[in-house]
Image 1 (cartoon, rainbow, N blue to C red):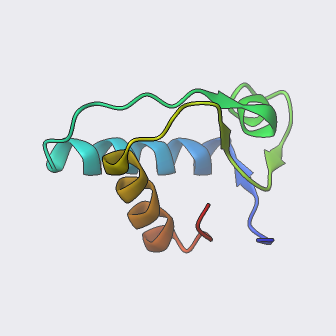
Image 2: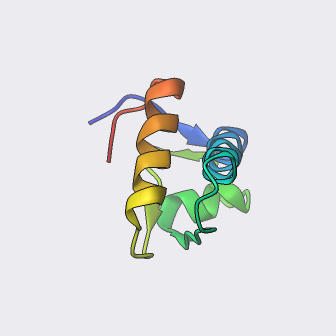
Length: 78
């Protein structure tokens, strides 16, 4: 388990980086439905969370972008 904490600015920065990577690759736009503690952090209902959960089926291009951004930002995969 990661010791990283994901607060609102960290989650937003990571999601923007994923979107930018997908756009640069000309990939189909993706949609992530964020749930749980990360949803609460994004809406300032809690300070932070240890992971970002989604209920969305993740396509290969979105998975590649997520993995690349996680590596760039020093986050653990999955």
